[in-house]
Length: 232
Image (tube, rainbow, N blue to C red):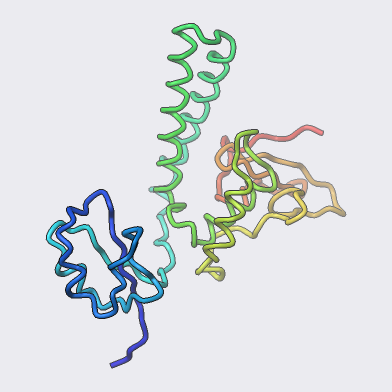
């Protein structure tokens, strides 16, 4: 049997009840640390601590994750449609909040906008963008870094995430090409021929499409009503 490590133990501090049985069974002492975080360098991934923990605070996570499962088009279509509606409702609420200011109605509108944003994010994640190591999630992050959807978008944090979690299904079919690194339109487009520029209302990507071709977002696959033509 191979001795190569495939998992590492992690402790959920919110669940830990300090029974400390993990300290007795860990063969390397990886669970006995000053900051209560299991030492990943010493952990063998044997699982003894997880099996001994009476509060279920310790679990094993894989060192290598499989590619994210693909979603069927009949599942994606209604999810994207609802996400687009939620994004539109968020925009209306933000405009109202900015107009009214700190009045009760303005605070209510701001809270509503936040709620709509959370629902939209959940819909996008469940539509196949859950795992940051997946190609589609990487493409989405690169598109947002190149063309931020708002002034509050954490570009540095997104870039750091890309560096920490390299994509593990780079050859996956159906996920569009990566956006241009120089901040130009995501997905490229034919620069030497007549083209139209579109902005994706789902993921914020901006891309060019040759004249006469049906536009499809190269990042998230959105089309039709989820794209707007960028005049220019």
